[in-house]
Length: 115
Image 1: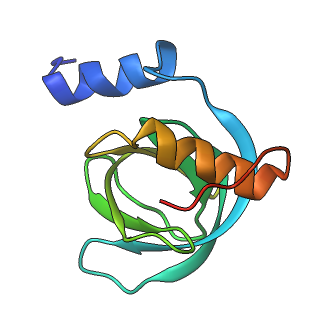
Image 2: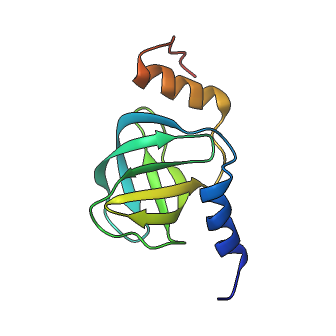
């Protein structure tokens, strides 16, 4: 098997994540590159990415856009798809303030600060 930088990233993303993931349920929109947006539920979120429900297969390396309520669309790259769940890495890390506000808003355990 030829190891490319993309393969190394995918392996590293599974083994050594850049930020802790938080299990959560957030209704959102997900739009694959060249496709139509569909409703999804974000299952976990970190500064570097997310996983979400996804009935149709999304291919590794393809781009997509996640739209969380009240935020602009966030570009991400598909890292994996398995059993109707997709795992994606954000093209740009989330701001820690935005990340914390999202968690506080949907976990209900903190104060939500508008940005």
